Image (cartoon, rainbow, N blue to C red; front, side, top):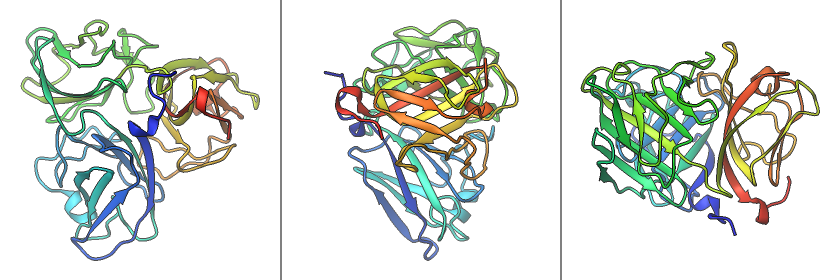
Length: 349
């Protein structure tokens, strides 16, 4: 039996249509089988920022940070007061509050939205002292996911305890207080390189050595001294998550990538090329094969139909064209995959 036979108790994708309404009105988005700790949202039909919030930093008008921007976490209400914000995290979803303008961020009438959500510590945190920088962590050891907050130092290596049950294979990290890139660690690339949320290829590392079962390591020069930093960390769990790589063939008979489960969400980047976007694909926005719709974590762009086509299978995924973002001949791609159903309990679409 897989470690997790009901993935939607730990991760899921929600979609909804904006209803508009009056300034300051609230709206509950429900449908999850857990209380989410990380919420990553994007308008599908408007060119707005990706909105990333979590239970460790808290929610409100000054907490959203965007994967498509290097802007710091706001210190006061900004565009959220105009375009809406996430006002609370609830037992089976979250609550939105309309801003004073067109509500573009979360609830504009006529727009559609998607939210990718993960459960960490169910709203609770603990102190982790396994690194030389004391961290605050919210951890779901069953699902191999943690949210990690710490204060950066420019004196020596920053080793940060992550709380996971194994070595991190995928880390998304950034400063909260200064305008820096997002830094992405992927085990298939290793600590010699990092990715960032742009079209850039893998580049100079910020990792001061490979992570291990206790901590990950960040160079002193990465952020400003005293910056608060946040990281989202994952390790593979059978039947639930997998982080790997594949080589494209540019063909309509593209490579099959085995995950051991039917994916609910995929995040993909061509790691060695500096012109291709990141891609997020999921089965909430398209419930059938062959699917075409993607969103780009590095861009404000609306839902994109260029990834035609991809098949989501009972034990992995397969591409059906040679789009260079996902299947250029001879190119290496990294991926992060999260499950809808383990192979034992799943069937192809």
